[in-house]
Length: 141
Image (cartoon, rainbow, N blue to C red; front, side):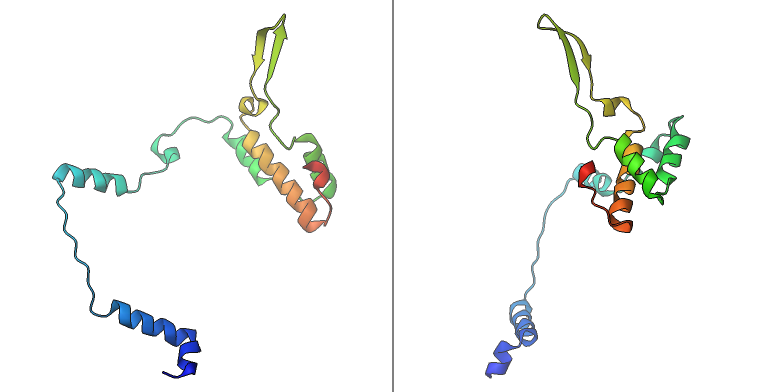
C-alpha cells in the first residue's frame, strides 16, 4: 500500500467496511408468547395526542390563542411587557403567626391559567428587543 492510500480517509473508510462487513451475518432467535407479542405491538403503536383523545371544554382557549398570536413590533410595547411580566414565577409564601402557619399561598404561576401564554409573550418581546432592536436585555433577566 502506498502512503497516499493510507492518508486518504475516504479510501481508508471503505477498506475498513469491506474487511469487517464482508461475509458476516448475525442470526438471532427468540421465543415470544402471544401475550408478550400483543403487548409489545400495542406499546409500539402511536397513541393519539391527549387533546384529541378527550375533548374538554376550555373557556380560556380564545384568550390563549389571542395571547399566542400577539406579534411584537414596537419597542415601547416590548419594554412594557418585559417590565410587567416577571422573569420567574413568584415564590410561594407562608403567612405565620406565633410560629404557626395560618395561610399558605402557592406559587402564583400555578394560579394563573394563562401563565404559559404570558411567559411566551414576554419571551417574544425579549427576542424582539435583542434581535430586531439590538438592545441589551440583561436588565430584564
